[in-house]
Image (cartoon, rainbow, N blue to C red):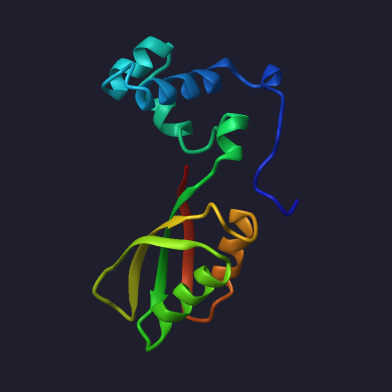
Length: 145
């Protein structure tokens, strides 16, 4: 299977996944001020919320995906960050923030937040393309909104 994502009917999923969405929506609409308050109102544990919050999306939310956060470990060599940025711009993303740590042991950590509303491919294709760069050791999709 080439995609990491599936579309399934909520009827076959455990009810707590829908409650995770409910808690997240309460936080977004300020119906609940804290995560503790939101999970109590939704009827789930904080552990359940944290475990699934970045993996469960409403179909309408998925249609409006606009931001992503990516973390990467790159080699400490000239042009490594530049090649990562070039690949991101080639896929029509817009970098919102970028933070690179001081290189230690021949590698540096990079955290990038992106506007992906104009992206030319699915997010998992972008991650795969970044993994193919010679100067990139690891890439991880941390969050999508």
